Image 1 (cartoon, one colour):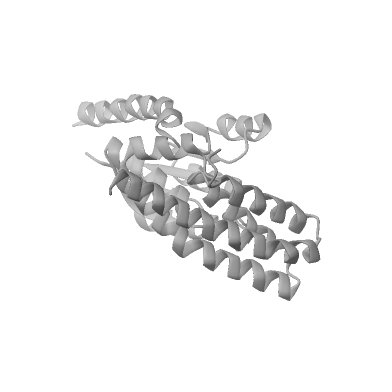
Image 2 (image 1 turned 90 degrees about the vertical axis):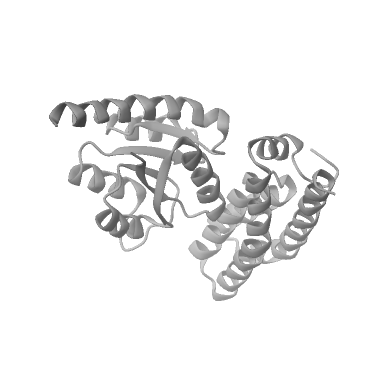
Length: 117
Length: 136
């Protein structure tokens, strides 16, 4: 894992596959992650365990696709807590998850800039 | 002739990656659904030759992935369905393969994991193209 919390192998594989694909996924993460975190927040506030689990699951899957490992692990922890019905625990995980998501987006954009200065 | 394809996955990331690989293979992605109920509606509308179906999707209108799989296969028995899953559980895999799934792919969907699927698609669609040619 890189210092940025990204998985070098996943990024290299996506880049080898297509630079356009990698860029499309990074753009998608920048749009999708805040929306899903908002959905997670709303579900927790409403006491909706299933909605919280679903939002966290999608965030985990999205993060894994682009190799954002720290974000993936935090989303996985939130998903497990939601599945267990521990919504107070999930609530405490939202800010760290948001932070990991923002860091991942910034780091991924830097990776693109390195490749296409 | 391009293979008309429907992608079913609740993750827009997975849909983007799957679309990339299938388009590169020569499929025409006619639609994308984000849950099983939407998949059934789009299946009726688009009549695809190939469906990629995510296993782990939230149930909507009483439809989960297995129910959608069974309904699509019963309405179109020759339909090729690639099941895509985040979990490498043998039982889940065996269920879908036993019911006629073309392949069971564990996410992430990469060029490496797509290769065996690509070979199966070539085999299946070459065979059906031959049958169509022979019928003419």
